[in-house]
Length: 124
View 1: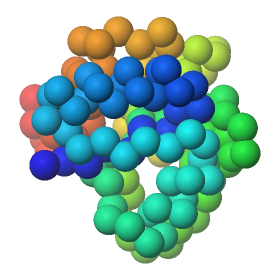
View 2: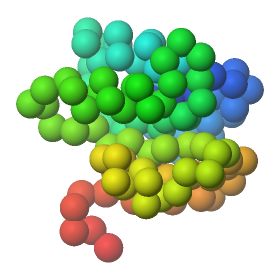
View 3: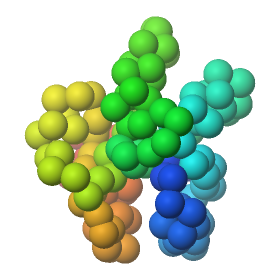
């Protein structure tokens, strides 16, 4: 079972994403800000994918990405940026992310992007 880390400060959105993803067979680890998952990454099992909101209290998505990328030699964890701001897929890719979702998030778009980002390289 693949594990997804959902980093989203809005409780309703976070819980909604978790319900949809669990229904698809994923294990979901929820986090309300960018600091919580960094603590998990240093001590818990490594997730297969991170869904990252950008505007959050405590530690926002920009700072989370910077700290995640500074973690050292471990292989990168795919990150999907989720935002209602004016960021773009190009921005996300330029900053080391594999995916992008514009808020409000549509369920089918969410599932397609998660599947695409979890697919082995070279998979059509």
